[in-house]
Length: 195
Image 1 (cartoon, rainbow, N blue to C red):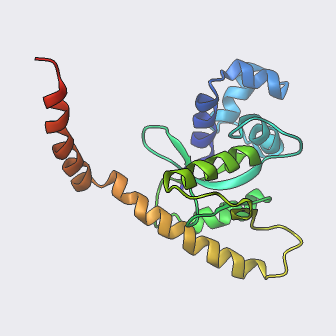
Image 2 (image 1 turned 90 degrees about the vertical axis):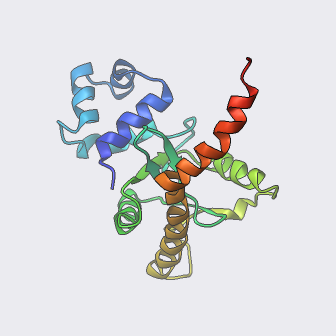
């Protein structure tokens, strides 16, 4: 599983913000913010503030939710859907537990703070790629307190769906498949170059 500090640094880059910007949001010195981001200073007391400042999407009221994501070796972040649904978590610890259980499937797995609107737009884009209409019910909070189902049963189902998605995504990094794609497209791109 990706280290929390790696995820926070990737989120900061994705937002196009600097350590100075983050320090201003948190009300701390630049040096303190840098130490939090790099893991040189424990973040327990400021984790919620860091998550809110770095969450994917535009801030809305309240606190961000958490999604299972992937941080690839190029520093790209992506939410991981469970099939055609996007599960979110209210409790970071529950999300972390699920991510740790998925570590055997993907070493890139991580927990991403996310604002609900960003998660919705991500789900809409996913459905649009398949020419399907998104359904608001497919974006949900797994550990919502008002659910009638036992949390462990729901987590098992969600974990299975996330695992299937992660296993399918491993093809995107498989060297043999990447070579095949390169070979198939090289002839096309070479033919389109001006002579």
